[in-house]
Image (spheres, rainbow, N blue to C red):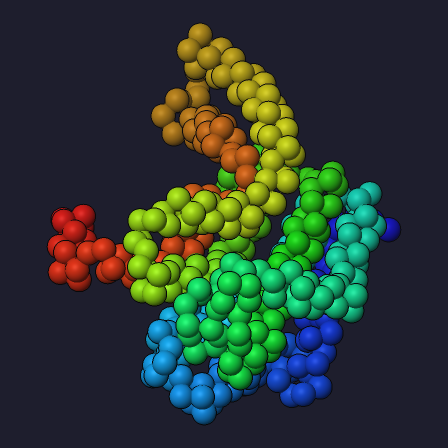
Length: 396
């Protein structure tokens, strides 16, 4: 088969169009074949997680307070978890699908995969699809949710105060009726959707690692400054909603500790900073899998274009500086000048080639998405007027 024909094959890959839960959504008319009905999914899943809690808390007299310190309506962490973070995680499916699905096709369309490596490329994609569609993988996530996830919530997230969902004692949490729904339906549902995202992300990153081990045809003078892999970096921002949901969850946890445990915002500055960095690295480090090939392509480009530039400059010097040009040929308007400028631009592009397929703008977008939900908590330290004054001072 000719090289061009092989290199143009475009395997179809989607991170989200598959798996038992996706098939369940299709059968229950919560999704179409291409993730349609997103609003319906968000509404139904959010109501399953949140509405029974309201009803049961209302029946138990814990909506506004009563005998508990933390009423249902005052539980900030719970509301942001199920009414903000959960809908964002569901909506992120369509965003990630529309941005990531064309990426694999770009490897083929741009002829980055050399002909000899195409079978390995297809094998990597098919392997990732099998993991995405795995029933065992999602069942394993479900087991983790009801074991490790449940233990983590009871011992690390649940507040040590009498609340609408539980009354703690020395050894355990005494759950209310609303607490039982929270502990065994709402929290597991949220954890399952969150951990399912991380399963998908690990599958995607594993696919990138396998592709990075193939011999790629990289162009050091490519204008994207990433050897032609800039399209990978352009898709990283698709994960911003997932980071926003994580930031929202973190903000809710901190807010609960501030308002009900009497802790200060600055108490969490180290933990929050570490978590933000960890989240950021989790999404960016896998794209460094290509750094080795990018580094080698840059070195090769600098060497080859350096030789070309030396040869050209020697010829240019002999012709125009040492008087080797024919008497009838004028320097003014000569194409040699433009060629010299073009060669200089090409060498400059090679020198500016990055070792990762993303730029600083991508990092800024991901950091902003993670930190944005935490920023309103500044109002627990400064008044709105003080914050406004500081913002104006920064802008001016």
